[in-house]
Amino acid sequence: MHFYKICSIVKNIPLKYFISLLVVAFLFLGCNKTTQETQWLLGSWCNITPKMRYYENWTLTENSDLAGECFVILKSDTVFFERMQLKKTKNGWDYNVTVRNQNQAKAIIFSSTCITADSLVFENKKHDYPNRIVYKKISNDQLVARIFGIQNGKPTTEVFPMKKVYP
Image (tube, rainbow, N blue to C red):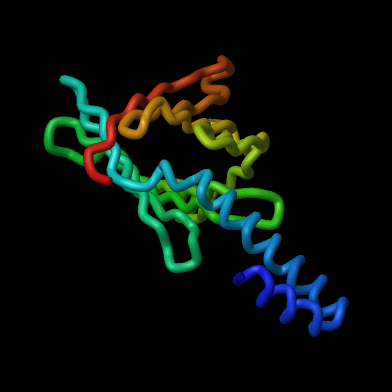
């Protein structure tokens, strides 16, 4: 019954307006799908070893971007801190990272090269280390982050397995 009401409304809309409406609807639905592909990253994640505690916290911003913080604690000292932003662009997603006491507090931008339902891959070939960042969802409460690049002239990879500690 609702279908017939919709059809009667649609037949009274000029074709050019109807097509414009369809285009806007598809763009909106397409953006939501892509945003959904990054939602699994939301929450608080950690990796605690005898030597260190590694934390990442991701939240959703007002404009559907993701904002994150990462810090590493050795004993009782925070030895590393960075802010991240996962921002939707016309070409995909940008992973913007600002590291405390580095790069004059300017963000380094990594562009998405592959976004799927369980992985996020970002690259900045001009950056020395890292130049590639990968997040891989293992399960709803486990992920692995990997960073790749060249350090001291040698290919280097660091692996950060994490468990979700807060939704």
